[in-house]
Image 1: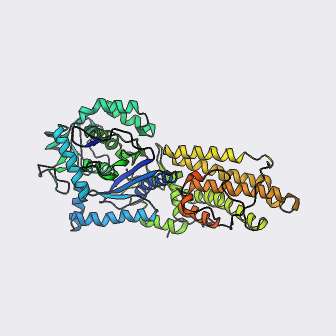
Image 2: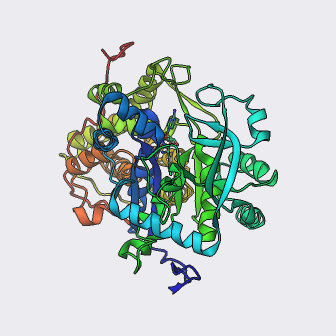
Image 3: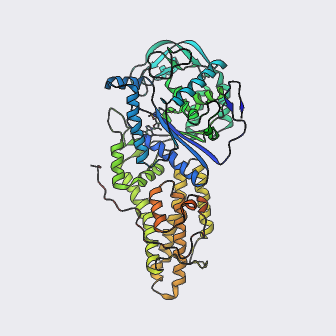
Length: 536
Ligand code: MSP
């Protein structure tokens, strides 16, 4: 590390490649948590668990965005202080984390001293370097979003907030500005050189189009409210909530501490995972701020699309958010893992929105979890119980029927699954594991060990088949563990699959590790659930 011109230590060498860093957006405390927040955080959790299972040292950061006019207003309406409101709702967000079994390493809150101090340090440095300056601004202001729009943009929006539909108001302010316009060329270069900097591709193209349209400097302070981080040296101004919020990715790992915090070793993030509505801030403003601070760019900004609910956009006016209570109801009926699985496989990770409907959820649960994985594991263990005294049989290595080469087949699936996971294609990674399970199912149907078992002369063949089924399921289980940690844990326990240290590694997903003689008890992973129209 060497200090840059701003005095912030600059990472000159690449980060060790056994480290990984992933972040979620930090969530606004003026709203209650819902499926959208749970979704982004669950995706990150699955990725983090999967990287840990490979033996990487992962840092997974989430948290809450607690400043701004909206929080100040909501608190006033309720007759409590903004901090009280923030405390109350930050704990609601933590409940989501617990409900979904999310293994974040830190939960940052923008009202914490560590964040406030580092933001002030960073802004001071930007002021010193000339990237932040005092200027006049007249523009169209979206009061709900606390965002200014240029004339061109406001016209495009028909002078209405794209979120609340309320009219934009004409406003003039003396503000501190960030010299975004100075970074146009460097940003375009970044996009050109790193085609995967923003994913999915369709989103990248949208941002790039807007970026090529030109950049204006952005006001980064406000004087119309108080609930924010005071601007260093001019306390009439508070720092704009978006700059404050984006900085959490750096302050969470101590990048603006002096000396650098111990966690700075994780910098930069591999993924900033966000929803599509906040892409501009993440793909343009944030990289420019990092350039100004001379900090290394993240690996990828992944902007997923939105969940809609039973065919309709979720909104306050419709009151149709899938909230904590409903999520709890789903969990009670179907279990935590089934929700995690559904979010990861059926969710809007690409450029189109996904519908969260009760019937689709039920169907996915029944088809994939009850009828496929659950059934396969239970059939296999029941037959091992019946024909092999509950002990894992020996594989003689002789080919049975049209059998695949299981060693090669599973290796290909494992490699493909891990590659997809690394690229944040969670559904693709899971699909590879499911291919293994489906192959087992077909294998049982084709070879019919339950019929062969009637003839004592076929016992070796039955053993071969059942070893292969159990071993393939064990390997699929290694891949599915980050997605469904609870149910896979229960499979491991019932099948006596290795000690805690070994099982944490997907390096164990290698054919032949299952030992002959291992006690394999009958397992019921996913109970059948009766469909009801509503959770109540
Ligand atoms: N505080 C800002 C983010 C600052 S990050 C430096 C913010 N917060 S938010 O509470 O509104 O959360 C927005 C995020 O919640 C989205 O980016 C997305 O991750 C998630 N979702 C909110 N609604 C969603 C859906 N309907 N569907 C999927 N995820 C969405 O913006």
